[in-house]
Length: 164
Image 1 (cartoon, rainbow, N blue to C red):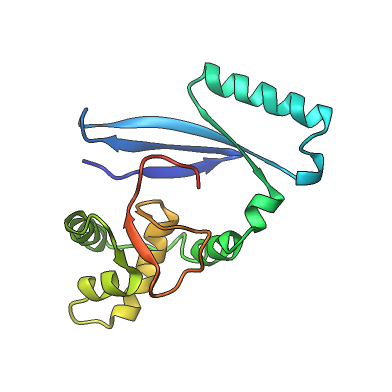
Image 2: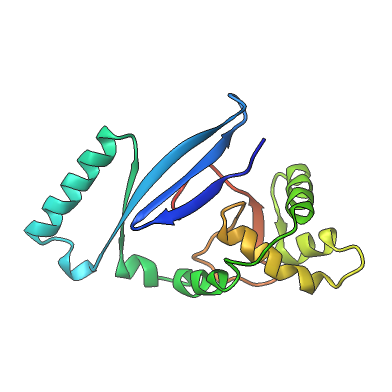
């Protein structure tokens, strides 16, 4: 069974996620609209958001509105910037599969430090952190991005589809 695959096309998030029940990859697409908070209640913005929501409903897409305030609240923006640095890193498939098998056995998840230690054979567990950041960026792993990322940050396998 495959893993969740996500890519961006303009303002859309496009990809597939595994269906364990159907044993196939289910395609999805979401449209993310970013609006400044100051313009959110303007008539033109409300018209655009209503049209976007209607289109998403008609085409079975997820429509999400993110404001600049939402993005900058807490640690989300800093965390996304950190994870973006590792977005193009090549992670060996063996690390991804070992990570999945470790976390399947730990339903409540592990800290980044504990997961890196469980993955490490001969290398320092800190050398594996970039791989874990990449898996977080690709939505293979999940954590609360509103909290600062640290070695004690809890991670688990991706929860049901959520844009953030």
